[in-house]
Length: 338
Image (cartoon, rainbow, N blue to C red; front, top):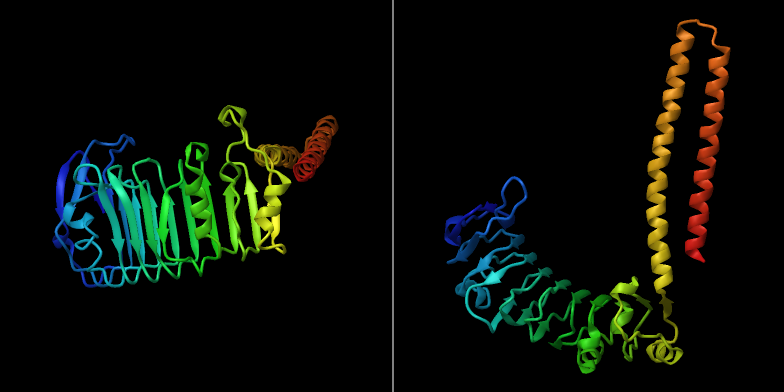
């Protein structure tokens, strides 16, 4: 449902009660040329949607009734499994608690938490997948109660103080923090301590910190920033002592360290292969055109020995170009693996 554009409206949820609706997407309006209208849509009151499984709120303003533990928004969605917030806001001043409580929720995604939220609380005993991508520094802390959580993705500029139940069921975690050097190291240490049971961990090199991880099967460390202009003044190095410390609790885990040069080479190989693929398509088209011209000439029964010789030369040149392309692609892949 697209609400707008160019309107500042309050939308009573009671108008949208349904006993059969399973999937719903509320989205703020846009004009036909892609320019975003400066409108706002505020959800108010409550609704009855017992069959709803998936709810996506995109750039919606949540009223006080809904922001207060979302009692009026999701409590009536007794079968809700998938919930996504994208750039939503909350009515009111700063220091508002952003709380999500639901007993059946399985997948939760928060893309850019409300700018005026003081804290984020998630209580979902059946939650399996949690994705949080932060773009502001307003949050002071995150509290998560999700004992069955299997996957956690956390992206942001900084590392927050976490308060949570133990993640005993956590299988995989992706952690990306772009400015950890501005943070209190204790916040990062505290985060890693909560991940002590994780089996597969991916994190960017910039947030590397000592952490005992006893149940690791694999650990991969990669640089998030690969261009010199992006790097902080004080560079981090991966020392053998740090690697040994990380693997001390899980000596049998697979350790993968990706350098900035490897990331850059991998990206270059990918770009090169895409360009070569486009060139190959163009050569195939040229080849098809030559064959078409040859067939057209033969249909007219015109003796064209010289033209045939010329087209044969062009065909041979195309074949040589194809071989050269395949050789370049193979060489690029080999270089990327070195």
